Length: 346
Image (cartoon, rainbow, N blue to C red):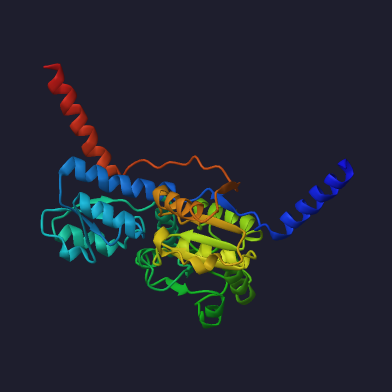
């Protein structure tokens, strides 16, 4: 009798395995979301609103994320396309993507107080462009035409810089002296595609000089590495980020290149199409460098409601970098603190 029961049990278990749905899980990338430059820029706007009161004007989106922009607008930030739109005598904050010197000059003519929230890693590229231009190099800037960061960097030395928008653009490059050429890059590009472009450039210009250190920022590289690690195992990868966020768009491309069957970019969980989950047992989740964690948690909750409750973190790197607030803002915050301390001591 016991043997018979055993046989029935084994048969039942076999049938259960055959009919059971495949285990569903989520691979959650780490690191993801806010990088140090984005965190600094967003806090700069928030602190400026606290310090000076609304409105505070911001030239272009402080970072490329719909949720962040809408949240700051509710607090009193006003986003403008051009410096000339800011009323005379007001404060204008320059976005994390950086601006050309001509924009600083426009602000001076408009008698505007400025707070420069340019990411320090973008500032590094600006300084490299200035240095190589002074040394009379032809500078090949790898990046996407029209991106704010590219516009800002190009403006540092427009007579020396030409844009190279991917490997297919290399054939169009013309330089004065093939032995005096250097490449720089937009900080938010795909590492693999950038190096493919560099290799193509070196094929034309063997003595091409490289920047002193990587221009693609640490956060972009770390997020791409995490996606590569989970992409091979994930059936579907969901990247949280806005369509005008270069680094977020690159994460979708990296996921597909790493082996994911499908990958999509969404701003909010509500944008996920349930049809994407058909035949899917493993979902990878990550977010661009300008995305607050609350949006990722919304996606995880959406997935959990559909059976994807098991979350496994895929860690590619640990990040501990922080950047201090823009100097103009630090100055005014210190002055206020000193005044408050003096008043308290009276």
